[in-house]
Length: 97
Image (cartoon, rainbow, N blue to C red; front, top):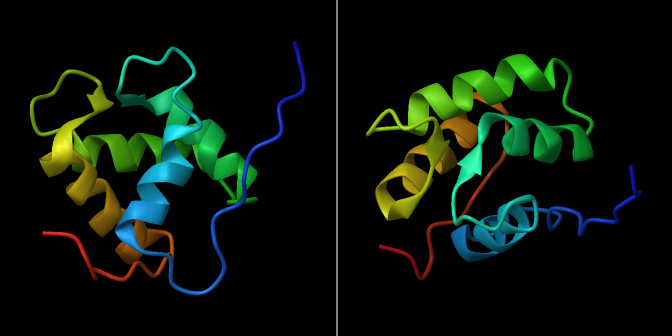
């Protein structure tokens, strides 16, 4: 397995666009959606405890069409809300929606 370097989540209160750009780097198969495994990898990069469990909860909370991943503006917005409530990520809404 190759070692990959990822950009860190911007410090302070990142914008939705910054969060989306940060999350996109974990889309390993480039299908435009974030799977539970990809979200788990993203959370591990933040040193989040129980990343597998929180990733499962994040996908469940965000996956409106129940296809097993997070894609599209509506589902991404749901994931942002989950991150704010359950992962203590503060995201500013400026310039979005």
